[in-house]
Each structure stands twice: as structure tokens, then as C-alpha cells.
Length: 318
Image 1 (cartoon, rainbow, N blue to C red):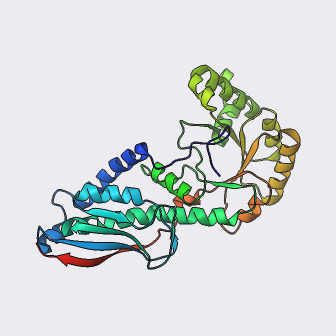
Image 2 (image 1 turned 135 degrees about the vertical axis):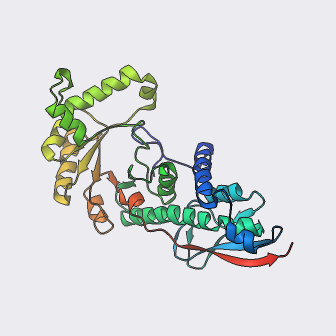
Image 3 (image 1 turned 60 degrees about the vertical axis):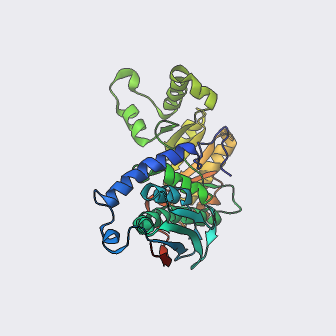
């Protein structure tokens, strides 16, 4: 479960704000495909008043995501096309299964084909991969998280699809959590700016002070403070400073187990996140070390698109 809580990032769901964001993104996609002339092939071959129907068919087994966005895309191209999904986002579909039906102006259906299929392929591919990772760690305490390694402009749609697949959303952007990473610490270590010199533990304290001083509304929202470490010695130092989460970067299973043991002994309220080089072959082993979180950039940057096709059903002359 990834429900919002004291130590949880915002989880992206399909709501009015995501709908509006998707519509803005898809308007760009429509202009990209139709340009100033529209669908030249259909204009040359299909009578203006012709109508018909087509079906979106799964060409692979997988988890569907993006159906509400696909409907937006269809109606941006041709408001008269009726979009009827057969399943909901999050449904596991099989090869050959119908996912949705389009009916109405033939030119509009054909013009929407590629955008709809591309959209479903990308988002369903993310959801399908996320589900595989979630299933791989079933029975452990570990939850699977995405990262900010997303397609520019598509982040919330892609993170929504991660959630559809059953995994969790890490921070949405730089604005909604404190994540002190290696380069922040490198700056603090190397800085000659006087008070800008800080240790990892001091970085956590500075972050807490900034939240209280600058953004009092975020104190009420319990803004998360997370810090990245790459050694057990760094972990020992930061545990005493009380971060919400410690990100354990590129640690092997033996180091992760030792990190869990040290955390349990010294600061059991702090959650641990494993990150770096995790894949489907290794994620179970990582989860069994006892960490609460595993972040996987591959969910969004390396997923394989799920294949869909559009099959024409019938035509009606004008």
C-alpha cells in the first residue's frame, strides 16, 4: 500500500488536475501529428461524412493504463467519436482481448489511431513493468518506488501509470520533498563559503530549519526529509540526526542487511530505501534484506511498450 501518511510522498491518481495536464500535453501531440492540413491520407480516401467503428486490441498480455487519457486524445481530434472502454486502468488483459471501441466519423477514428495506440503502449508498458516488480517482492516488507527519471512533460502521467501497476510514487519533483543527495553533500564538504560548509548530519538539521522558517504550511503537511548515503559510516552519522528516510546508494545485499541491523538498533523510526542497479533478477534479494523501500528508475526510463492495435470493424457510407 502507498497511501498518503506521515512518511509518504504524494501518490498520483487520475483527478481533475491530471486530466487538465494530460489535455494540455495531448494538444501538443495532436498538433505534432495533424499539422496545418490534418490527415491528408484520410481526406484523400475517406468521404467526409463516412462513419464506422474500430476496436483497440491488446497484442500482448499486460496491465492497461492510460484509458482516460486516450479518451481525451480521441475527443481532441474528433469530438463526434464515441469512445467506449471495455476495461478499467489496472486491468490485466490478455493477447487478443478488446480494450476499447471507437465509433463515429471515420476520418476522426483513423486520425486518432496512432496517438491513442502510442499513449496506451507507453503508459501500459510502465504499469506492466511496475506490476512485475511488485509481484517480485510480494511477501516482503519492501515497497517499490519510481524515480524522477521520466519523459520531460510526461512525469505525472508516467507516475500515475506506476501507481496503476501497484507500485508507489517517489517525490513528484524538486518542490515536494527534501532529498539531500551526494552532490549537495559534496558542495557542503568542499564549500569555502563559511556557513555553507556542512556535514551530512548538519545538512539534515539545516533542512529541518529551512522547512520551519520558510514554508510553515509544509510543516503541517509533514514534508519528508531524505538523505542519500553510500557507506555504513555515513549511515551511522545521519541516523542520529533523525531523517525520515535514508537512501542507501548502490549497496549490495550484505551491506543492506548490515544497514538494516544498525538502523533497527539506533533509529527504528527511520525508513531505509535501496537504490541503484536494481533489476527484476535482483529485486527480491534486495527486498529480503529488510529495507522498506526500493526505488527503480527502470520503471519509467527502460520499460518496454505494451503492444496494441486498432482493428477496423465496419464502415457506413455517408
